[in-house]
Length: 283
Image 1 (cartoon, rainbow, N blue to C red):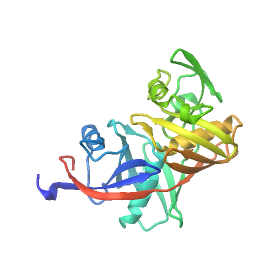
Image 2: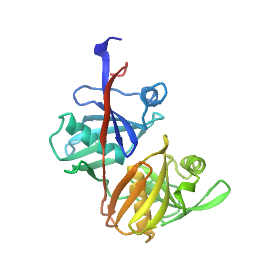
Image 3: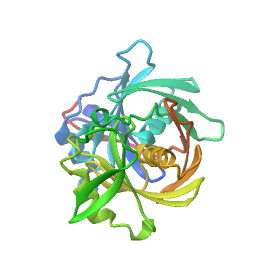
Image 4: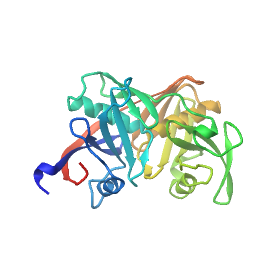
């Protein structure tokens, strides 16, 4: 394949959650599951948690469309860290001059604001709490659900932030069984579309620590939708105040939720790591 067939990419990260970003706005790009798996592989590919693709909007109320694939090649609905990177990517490449943008995703519309301090503020939308909307198999909505895993009954909060999340409260996030319990719960039969699993330690009413085992990826340094889901579960259970600092292994996010049908707001950084080109038949 000639150099002219090379596909440009940008490597970005948000609190250590890393992405390969493609510009499908100036050049149509078709990504396949096999290609995503190949470039996400950290020894033989570029290496990333997720692959992001910016495209022209299909809905008139959106400025752009963006799509997300996990490292296992599965396309997913939403990614809080990813949308901050997409917004920064579009501004840095001159594809948008706006401080505010609206993105179309599989999970719905997402509003983003680039702040003067380099951080990005995201309207993550209202949380979905009805089991059928998550989706989660349960007879009705509850603040906590009893779920059996590894021969024990666990109490878990369940919410969708455009993608499904289960949240467990733990005494010490450093000792939480993320590597063993995370995949068991991700694939639990009560989550028909699998789920991201959060392990939350509450420091005080405005501060939590969190680790997240992401669906189709494994544990990552940060998960934006996971941080939102954890705060929502904490507020519903009256453990947390409306604004919470969420410390993940990769750094801090600030999450605000007024409750009810109000949107969840997430604020955090997004930075470019490097740019390059990869030869591919998927163009």
